[in-house]
Image 1 (cartoon, rainbow over the protein chains, first blue to last red):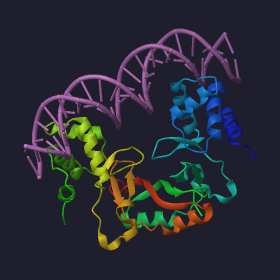
Image 2: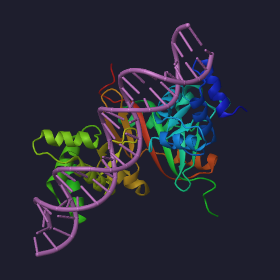
Image 3: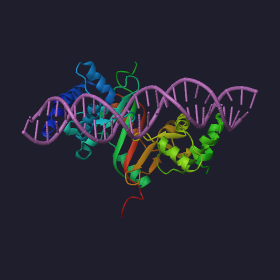
Image 4: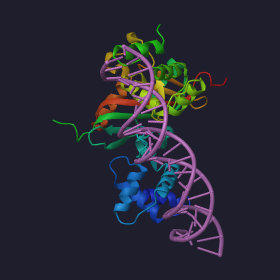
Length: 151
Length: 151
DNA sequence: TTCACTGCAAACCTTTTGCAATTCT
DNA sequence: AGAATTGCAAAAGGTTTGCAGTGAA
């Protein structure tokens, strides 16, 4: 069980990106975050920890991380969140890293990620009824997470 | 078969909103649009038609229309689009006006809207596997619309 | 006539760009 | 050393706010 942080650093190193202080700090913040964060929120968290980073750098780092599929964006807010490490075994190959379904709690703003939802039927329905050739989709659920459900 | 424009004006009048020139113009633009538009794009289209409207007014009008469920936003871009008039007969009551599924064409940027996709199974799967109580969702499909499919 | 609504000015927040200085490897 | 990356300054873009003036009902 590798941590997200270790995984991300490994991916970046592997692809010849430099492991700089700002990059490490952003990844540490993302690693610890339980909800999605904006570029500014990430910058603030880093600054508060003592060694400030420029906002522009945060933007550029997030861009890099997104290109390497280490984070993805919540459509509704534009905030980012680390990509969960996938359990290869129970994910169909074709949907790979690109099919994330988010569970966004309206109480605590926490975000969970679900892979492997079976969307085949729905996609088929769209293709049949609308004659639209689907090659990707984004799906976000809103509601209450386990902790915020009362009773 | 009422037009979107007539429908929207009726709803607003009914709820004691004033039918002003800027509101009429924004609704006309939305009525004719075949893809989603940003506030700026709407302002530009109106300006080009001869009688300019202030950007701030466009923002406020869009806010009003959104509150009254006459437009909704495409999550990915933040642009807005008229809500399609629903065919009451084949839509389950509970999902009513709030369950839109968008088909976004990556070729022509056109947007279609689909109601009545059967998401029950997927929602059930989420609730069961993640213990998350779903009360809403947003779903956007990306791909090729009928016209842009070759062959 | 009255009050909702608009237009204008200005502020605010977010994101992007160019370039010189820094720092990983 | 050399190239990638950062920080700074500045601009660009999008959105919001306050207030006085306008116009729909």
